[in-house]
Amino acid sequence: MSRYKVAIAGATGAVGREMMKVLEERDFPVSELIPLASERSEGHRLEFRNREVVVRRLKPDSFAGVDIALFSPGASVSREFAPHAARAGAVVIDNSSAFRMEHDCPLVVPEVNPKDVELALKGRRIIANPNCSTIQLVVVMKPLHDAAGLERVVVSTYQSVSGAGQKGIDELEHQARALFNMAEIVPQKFPHRIAFNLLPEIGKDSGNGYTDEEMKMVNESRKIMGLPHLPVSATCVRVPIFFCHSEAAHLTFRKPLTPDQAREILRKSPGVKVVDDLKEHIYPMPILGAGDDDTLVGRIRTDLSAPNTLALFVVSDNLRKGAATNAVQIAELLARDYADKLSAKA
Ligand SMILES: NC(=O)c1ccc[n+]([C@@H]2O[C@H](COP(=O)([O-])OP(=O)(O)OC[C@H]3O[C@@H](n4cnc5c(N)ncnc54)[C@H](OP(=O)(O)O)[C@@H]3O)[C@@H](O)[C@H]2O)c1
Image (spheres, rainbow, N blue to C red):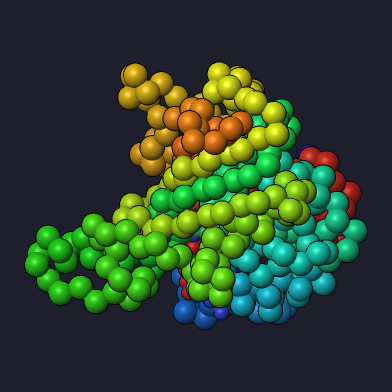
């Protein structure tokens, strides 16, 4: 079996560290791992497969001989450095929003639109990983759409602080400690206190009353599902938990679909676990989803307020399926089905 030289740009961040863990857990055939980050982290040591690897500074010439470059250094850094990696012959899988809506960069969730990777292999060699809250929604929507034809989506999210990176995790921890110690709280990463609070603002004001996180859910769902006019309305809320995003979704279909039919379809769908027995208090929760690569779905019921509509609750680990796992699954897809297009030496 071929082995691949893999670079991780953003290796010291929340997603980068998780990508290293997922590569190791899923036994991806790595011949050499090159962790890259900013000059702040140059020389830091990380562990991969029980060995220390030394973080190098991300530079334009960091990618010689690299086959796969997993990127998570943030959108502006990805925009600058991903083209260098692609020019050096690597296939880039980028977690940021930099390339997601570009027409020649596919936006891929392997359970939903695996063939879209071919667009990148024919051209720019950059594949975008969708936003975390979008990934878990489309994994559930796609099989239901195939069965009944999706016509409208209304979704509210409950997104963990790790969605805002390591600084988000640190801020909730510091604020929770400070509150118990009656110390002063000065919000830094989030606009208000996040500990024991909710913030109905994720990302910037996009100018139409929605935040850009909400518009990502609209535009990215349409692109991944191949439904450019799908009506989607999202409300994204940051909640004071560390890991996992949760979503309450109302999905309207062209054809009627009962909750039992939906459960049956979802039980057979890749990457989905049905966790749904209200009488027994069984439903998706962040404490069940954290560390799991599957997307959990439950509370599936008929929406009594609208025809042909189901309400359901979806939970997924934003650092895993919402970022690292999805990126590594794309790498696995490339290694399995497109190995001849992968080698930087090819
Ligand atoms: N967190 C999530 O749930 C999630 C989900 C999906 C997508 N994403 C996206 O993934 C990206 C990273 O998110 P994260 O949560 O991992 O953030 P993070 O914890 O803040 O990590 C950022 C990483 O980027 C590196 N970096 C920053 N500036 C750099 C520069 N100028 N040159 C090289 N490396 C640089 C940092 O290195 P230093 O340690 O040296 O500063 C660190 O390794 C973002 O675009 C985010 O939107 C995140």
